[in-house]
Length: 419
Image (cartoon, rainbow, N blue to C red; front, top):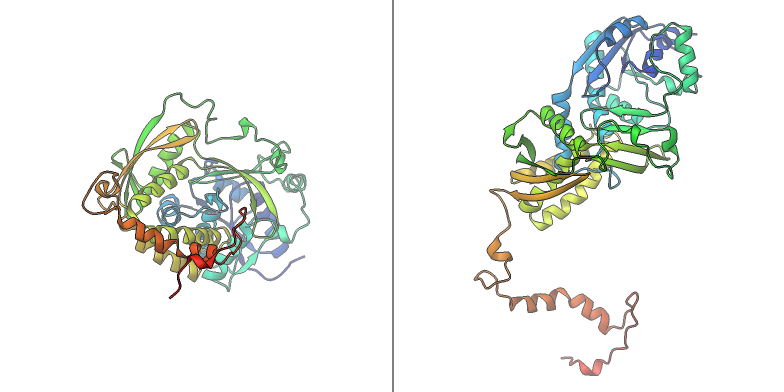
């Protein structure tokens, strides 16, 4: 039975089990033509043959765009400059890809004359929010179809049976236990034994990174060059944004860099456990932070840390195309001019060791920092500063107010002269 009048829908298509069965399901339930759109954001899964597979599943048209450079330049590096990390660990690899994919999905819908868009995100996850908030921001007139919130397919077994009954070509098997999402920035793993947070991830699960135990016994030194907060060179060689990330993924993966095991708070209200591999992103974040430590003043750096938390939350929650994210980018852009220079790192068995950093805009002055005698800092001035800085603590003690973990003596005000 038709669920509504839809003429043409553009589906975010990966070629996996879920999106493969969504094609015939849309045709059966909405009686519409289905255009499959695939975004190449650097996923390692096979992209060749997707057009034939989509058409064999019943699609009327297939569109694929290579978005790797746009992804790295306009999304990953913006997020990097902001310093965004969700809940102390997650470098937002899946989160940051969704608004880019959804943006191009809307563009394709306009080009082919579609009146609806569809995605394969489940009703329990964050991706449904990220896709649909982008649709709302860019074209709220498009109808959104989310099959996982409508159909009666409730398991992987159901999905495989549905595909087989309609002769849909899929490679999925009942033995596949992990749900994975990969792109230029990371590879995520969820489900299966990872649903028990006490269960240690098995080594054969990892695909981008070597175990730190098996990584090379000698550290590898690299040098990253930045221009206004944007990474542009590796070991003196200029690379495109996507090329730079891919090469750092290779180097970081070789040395076991970038593994994260996180129990996170989903936007929809539940906790989930995910294991992420982000070798290149971890290296870039470390280098960027080191250069900021050299070039940003204290107040700006500390406030930027607050901005980074909010920025990460916006990305995670799907609010990329929001006025607040745009406003925060204005602040970030204004801080990044002096974040220019080089950072030298050593990669060693899952660790990133900082070997050096330099910048023409460095605020570090050896003559100021030295413990020796110099002309720009009179150490006797520190006494007056300490008296003023500590005045609130002194008054608190004089008033006999409690200090946690310490029994304060009652003050004898007779010892203090009052005018």
